[in-house]
Length: 207
Length: 236
Image (cartoon, rainbow over all chains, first blue to last red; front, side, top):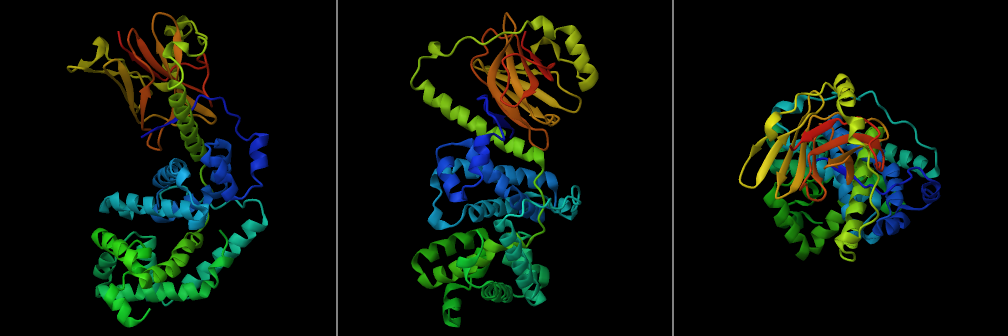
């Protein structure tokens, strides 16, 4: 489905948008609640890279990843009145939507298409955003998460990656690895529990 | 959580937070969580990890054109909300001042011929298209590779578009309706998906309309066309 644009004459990248960039996500969402597009634009600018990166990691196709991200941001917009800051950060909420939709898209794809990876845009690495304290903290956290995943025994990281990034159910993973379902569930639990311990206090994690 | 607890609860917390339960299992476990504090606690602990996993992937920049598509949808949504609010307050006849018109002659054969060079416009089907009891379908001129039809039902029109090129940077597609005079702007501004697809409702009634067309305009749209049409659906 295509998307339509409002004829209200808007000024993208305006001074008001620049002023909004100093606000925290939760403050921006109060404006988004009141249908302020410029506040939503700042939310988009702040998280589009992470959203696209996750969608691309799961879908492996740029066009599909773009559609997933577009759907996720529109879903965020349409459900803006239901946002509850007590239930998690905007980023976590958005990336949860991206993950669900990317997995749905992946599962809809035919088996024949699943081998198509790195089709385009693979060379597009992240253009380093402004080196704000928040970005520095996020990069440090990303490194810690990658380290925690890398340090797991291979059989544990494998089932986590097949499930989370590959969209496979525990039954499918068990069939693929020719292991009992209970073994797969146990590996998932052990792997996630170890990562949980490695990541430390969740209150210190960057949102 | 003890081994006994896990066995009792199916050891489903980890596959649940990873989205790896079968659909029926997922629903069953979700209901189970409502009554099992032990599993709720385990899920909350493991969700910290799955919430962090997106950061583990290689970071990339989102394509610039994607922002244009997203924000176009947001602005359209706001416009629709505003229109709905206004429609509850104002009589239809009390809408704003008439918009400026552009002489249709400015877009007549010469301009369309130029468009044909660039856009390889395919032939317009003559005779007005097929019809059913209440729906008529008109095939439209469109760029090469695109397939566009205008479906008119009870005076309301909808453009079904596939294979359209993406709009140029800082441009948006705008729908126009021509009756006896020049093309009249509509509120319908849109972009297409990565596959070039879109389904666009033509605002208002098409009663008396002779042509529905689409041009690529600056973001926010214009009151008069500033470019040659890329889609032309002839209703006459």
